[in-house]
Image (cartoon, rainbow, N blue to C red; front, side):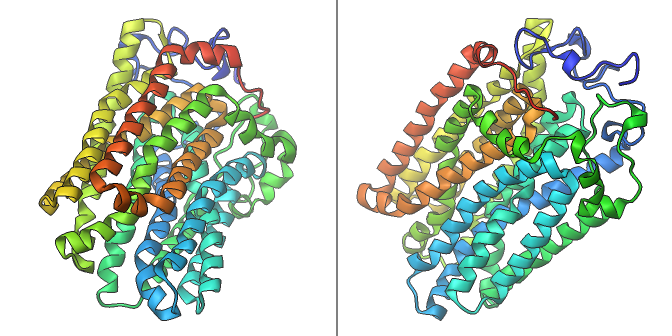
Length: 498
């Protein structure tokens, strides 16, 4: 550490884990635009905080595009199952098992990606996971039997999720504290849009092409991300507790991409057992566990709606494949609007919180946007139920869907930023568990969403979903009121490295 610089740990108050003291970082009047920054970078040009802004933004774009792949590919399979079932002589429900397996592995893969990044380094984990994702996407496109296709889909789900699970680590590595919310907003925007872009593009492709083509397109997209990681990204891990002259030598970018340099300096990071234990330590923190449960009961309906809405739209509005594709413009537009709104909303709310408490920034400030987003989610769910039950115009259904997605976009950034700033040294693990909660909820609801709506009626089933979302808000209220005390009680994470 260079003399005169303050480490990130020095900017964290000792009484409450990860309560940022603005007197040590930034005065409230210059909370996000002052000359003081957190964490303080070293004087080493290899320190990612010292990288050119263009290099940082390029890295953000690549990890965001890579994060787009997992849910895009998962949702693509939800549309291709119809022609696949006919070709293989199977029921659509049987073919859908490949989608369920893929969805489950998307959540599990992110946890392993975050743990591996703490041991092997960020860059090689991103590169090799994407290499396997590329190979398995091509396998999906070239599969000649359902058994082969299902195996490829399961493996693709595990490896394609690397940036959803570990992307937040890189954001934490290269951007300053005051930049986090806006950068998370961009990264999350790609994730939220992806499950809608998959069905939209696939629906249009299937009007003229065989089912294999959507997966060849996925293969091409994955290949472009793989090349971008290999040619344009660099290792973002940098331990500022080590003096500049003792930092690992950076001699060959190729050796960093494949992981050789990181392997040589592995003694400076977590041991393999320490790295694999990190996700367990993180989920045992009460605030992370509460966040996991909240997001599971809030995001589950995203997957449920996305995978089953077409089943209701076809008989109700006499929609064909092309019309189903068009209606996906509604959630995509809503997600973009949520991202644009969040670009200003998250920092504005945090600033107002900082001004109110004068001397310190609490991670709980990030939760305030959820109170703004929840009415949009509730209105959207209720209106979808009424629209499908009573046969309202399809534009009403589209607007209702958009309201829910707008709210979930803002909520996702809020809950992610809260966990990052509660435990910044576990950025990857917190993001991985948030991702796992998202896919776990979707994994569960996809099994009974259609039968539930058919048995109870869309109005009642979506009304219950809205009620569960409203009840889950009690968990956010608990974190808002007692999150600070809970973090003090549970203590900080004693990880060897960030």
